[in-house]
Length: 96
Image (cartoon, rainbow, N blue to C red):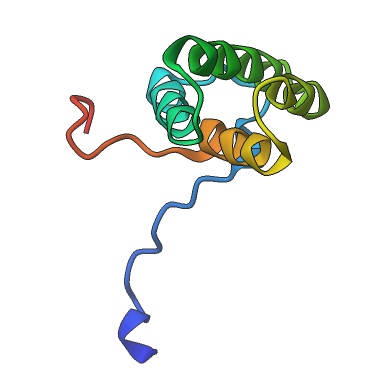
């Protein structure tokens, strides 16, 4: 464990601090991919991402859950909320 002493601490994304802020496009893209992996078609995936993102940007987590539950089960809703609040920029993103 001593090998970590003196090293720079990695940046941790705190999803709770991200509530009440607009959801960036890279997180919406990650949310779209997750919805599709959970079995939604593209149109329903975008609807889910848009509706959940809108409520998270308003700092309304319960309304975000309600929106997600229109498309996904409870676990899927928690999963999409987590992605929309914490997904990191892809390593090949132009701003990196």
